[in-house]
Length: 214
Image (cartoon, rainbow, N blue to C red; front, side):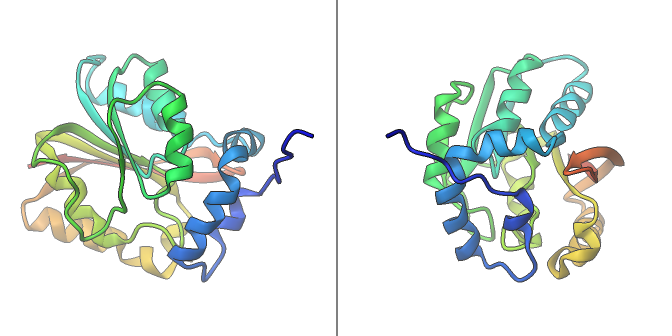
């Protein structure tokens, strides 16, 4: 008998109080059904993010991009569809990265958690770091911003998409925009845009932050 995947609601991995360990265990059992389940809830974050990245580079696609908290590669697929070809993926979960590899849109696949730890990536290696869906409870924290900046060349971009409600609902992310502003005051980056957009996931509004690295 073929394996029957247990479908899951994306909100389950965004529940209040979920820990990092719990979220990673959740993904191990969800990986096989992740893409289908996100289609079912109209997860529009990757497509909206990819379209914005094309705008930022004014249609130029011969740039290097790091997809952070890449999961199964939904954002990588969206970026590939709009013309990008030089992309690497970073994710903490090996089950999710194994599926991302099958999409054949990434070069290097890096299994590591994004936080205060230094990634095995050189300073300024990429033209952009992009993330859609990493800012969920029990996932990456606000302390990851410095590393997102470090691996991007001066003049490159950091693009972050997330559920807008998480800025208020998740205690960790109430400090996200103040931390972004502090890094701007420190001369690390400058805000290009802060835009709301509809249908991020499960009918909820998304918010997309774009910063240019100094």
